[in-house]
Amino acid sequence: MAGALLEMRGITKTFPGVKALDNVNLTVQEGEIHAIVGENGAGKSTLMNVLSGVYPYGSYEGDIYYEGQECRFLNIKDSERLGIVIIHQELALVPYLSIGENMFLGNEQTGFGGINWDLTYQNAEAHMREVGLNESARTLIKDIGVGKQQLVEIAKALTKNVKLLILDEPTSALNDEDSLNLLNLLKKFRDERGVTCIMISHKLNEIAYVADKITILRDGSTIETLDNTHGQVAESRIIKGMVGREMVDRFPKRVPDIGEKALEIENWTVFHPLYTERKVVDNVSINVRRGEVVGIAGLIGAGRTELCQSVFGRVYGTKISGTVKKDGQELVLGSAADAIAHGFAYVTEDRKGDGLVLSNSITHNITLSRLELVSNQGIIDKDQERHAAEDYREKLTIHTPDVEQLVSNLSGGNQQKVLVGKWMFAQPDIMMLDEPTRGVDVGAKYEIYGIINQLVGEGKAGLLISSELPELLGMCDRIYVMAEGRIVGELPRAEASQEIIMDMIMQASKGAQTT
Figure 1 (tube, helix red, strand yellow):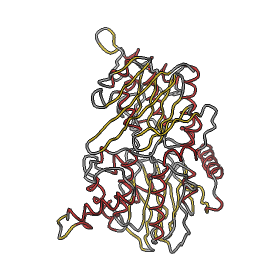
Figure 2: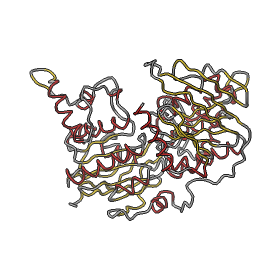
Figure 3: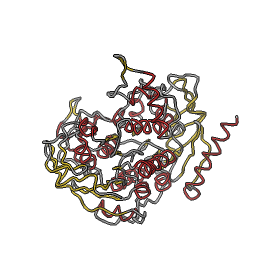
Figure 4: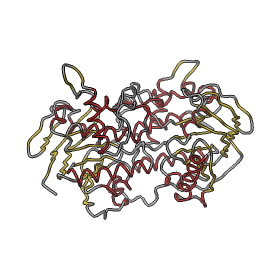
């Protein structure tokens, strides 16, 4: 490896009421993949926003040296001119524009006084092939999956002659296969093109697999940098640096006390809301007992989210048929309000689009699910509301100086905790959780798992969707396996393994292809 490509010295960044970064130092060598890890709120994304110019020079203290020269970026364009490109956790793509249009948005391929569309699509497809994306450049973004959208963002970075690629939680919305493909692509760029990468991730197995160096942040300060050139750093060692203590168990212990059936879904069928002839949930029958956590495993597109959303007050889908029973009593849930009134809660996977009001405070978001619990005669009791929010801030260790802080100012992981807190506050009997720990650090995951265990320990029922198989295996008493909109298997905890689950999915997919 060559010398230092990047040095960040003494970086300090303060927001109203909180010091997000406190004298942080970071050195990245040319031609390496450098991972940055830490708990939610540790300052990882803030540090990268300082580097890329999202937070301009003058809004922070400290110095940035890139290729030996001091840099004072005033905006993101300044850093991109030097080949520093950041891909944020929330992808910056326009759904109703084509792949080619997205790739050159703001950097249009012009000729003869206008945009040269032939050149645009030609150049786009050349870069797409470099990242292994075999789509037409004229395909709309909305028509490709999240995994392919992530590749579009990387191809877009290549159009900007990237030298230093920054990725913030690049695999948070990807399944295991797409994640592995992406990590191998980063290795390929490092080895064949000399591209340097900085990667933020909470998936420690991926960090251990791909990173040459690992820098750990805690409470806005640099703790240490570990050398992982030969893949010798264990996940337990990274966790110790992140949380400041050993974590023997990733999942809190729970002794199941399983009661009667709380939720029964029978012969449930759902069609796509736009493509009304496409069946997305196909005659699904499942049940969840009180005191039980039941998981649903499956690949992206298996129909897991569509199942839960359609049950939760029919907020998704059309031509819905089948029955939903709670405690043996058939229900007709015509809206989300109906579902909440009958003791259902749904923690969505899309916290920013469907789960939270980002422009409101933590307090307002947590109590929003059931305002009547903090009201007297239809008037909200502000003291009661704040007390409730403080309670959940403490339970979920939401890192913020004040519950009146806007949710938009929180890190992604802390936003996720607010979302979980919102539905915990609703005091549900049946909790449906869709990727509840996405973008959440290992310590916060443990806290969320503890809350789930507490709920089912009180006789509630939990239905858990997760793309992380270890999470399902560690938390669930039973696991349903879903593929192509159908239930293709059911496994008790003692019989379940990653290999068996994946084999069920693959066999079901092969069967679907041959019919």
